Image (cartoon, rainbow, N blue to C red; front, side, top):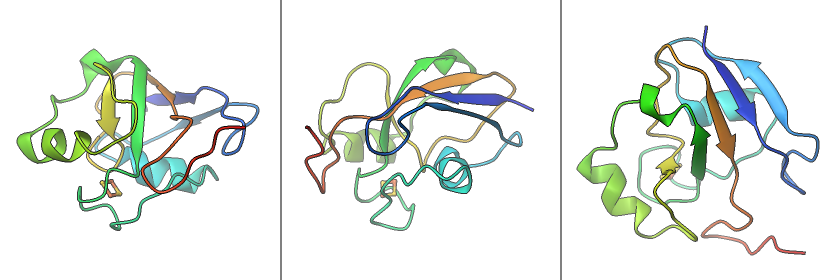
Length: 111
Ligand code: FES
């Protein structure tokens, strides 16, 4: 099974994290199941951008974002070339490394 590595985030995951996820599983659901409380205000239907993550390694193993995901990503804070919506990412065979943004669209988390 693919391994998900999560870089440390001061609020959501201070020590970082690592877990396995079934091929085809939702990254957003996997993060939540692993105890990482990523926001998902639209209930994972690609309509809020609060589940924005940066896929820092392994992104080549994932399907490209579709138009719906790209359109909603434009509303996320701090997007870059590695930005994805976690609710749109389905794991394939490769391991990935994920960074959670310091801010989401709902809350400023900077300290
Ligand atoms: S949970 Fe709303 S866009 Fe992913």
